[in-house]
Amino acid sequence: MRDSCRLILDKDGFRSAEASDGKIGIQRTEQLRPDLVLVDLKMPGISGLEVLQKIKAIDANIIPIVITGYATVESAVEAMKRGAYDFLPKPFSPEELRMIIKRGLEHRRLMEETQSLRREKKLMEDNFITLVSHQLRSPVAAVMQYFEVILSGLIKDDSQKNHMLHKAKIRLEGLLELINDWLDIARMNSGQIVSNKKPFPVVPLLSRLLDFYKPQAAKNGVSIIMGPTKGKDIVCGDAESLEQVFANLITNAIKYNRPGGRISISVEEEESGLTIRVSDTGIGIPPEHLPHIFDQFYRIPQSGDKKIRGSGLGLSIAKKIIEAHDGLMTVTSMPDEGSTFCVHLPKGNPAAKN
Ligand code: ADP
Image (cartoon, rainbow, N blue to C red; front, side, top):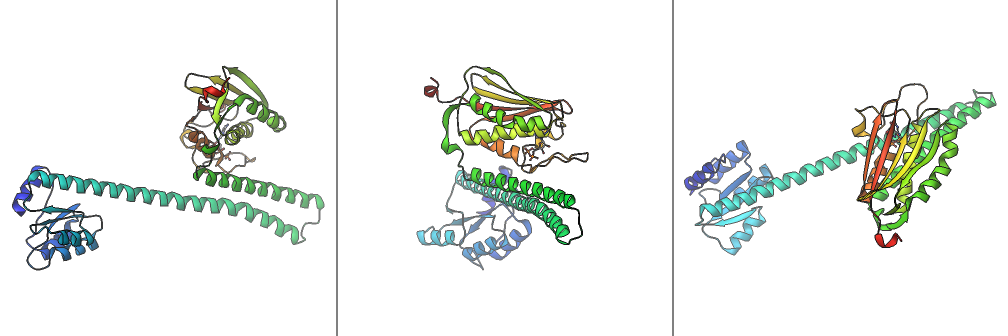
């Protein structure tokens, strides 16, 4: 039986080893750590059922398949209970052996894939917690420091005190923004965005945002205009989430701009849907950073004294929202020339267009 199994396995290109009883089998399993083991239930010395248990203890990923000439329902059930993946009654054909091994190895591959995905997810969660904790701690620590200095009574000058309180307020505003972003992520992970999809015109929403952000842009010396609108502007989506996406793109276009800079927003109807572009003539994005700017917490290192604040979460949230609308978000950019963020949304419900 061993010889014929080995012949078939060798022919199929597997590496195999054999053992004449359970004890040797366990030793070999320990040394070789095979992907799959074929175990006869009736063997001299230790029984096949015991061998099964020991194999599981050595490596839970090994696929054990039981071979027996006494294939009763009871022995099959017992073998399965002790961790056998499948059952091969004697006599069997080479084809039956091949089939069962193929199935077993496929199961192992899937098991390993699931484990690796689980590990990856855990790693991401751990990283996320570390990053968030760090981001939450630094503004709180900064505000504490300002308060300690003020409360110590060392500063007598009121305007200096006010300056510190103002700085503490800015750090707290940043913290609030981060918490809001974080809540958005939680909301999105529970899949709440796509539930409120309705067809609506996007140009009025953009115009409203433009009016709202104009004063902030002007304060930074940046002008902001509504560019051309080509075709109908109906999208099918959740207006509140989409507003958040465009608000984020516009604030970024203001924040990462320079005095005298321009921002323009255009809408174009295409066959496959609607493309909304937010272009700026700002500082631009170096090519090596472009593939990462949609990652959570990714921020491009800034040089110079005046640091632009942010959580590094805005674009990752925006991208998730667009993807939840079956849309696409892309960016093109040139350092020192500016950036264009493109949002492509599939067409709205045609019935609602009229
Ligand atoms: P935040 O602005 O809070 O840092 P975002 O996720 O919105 O986070 O953006 C990630 C990073 O991408 C920013 O830190 C910035 O470096 C870069 N970025 C985003 N938008 C622009 C833009 N319009 N021009 C230049 N850089 C940008």
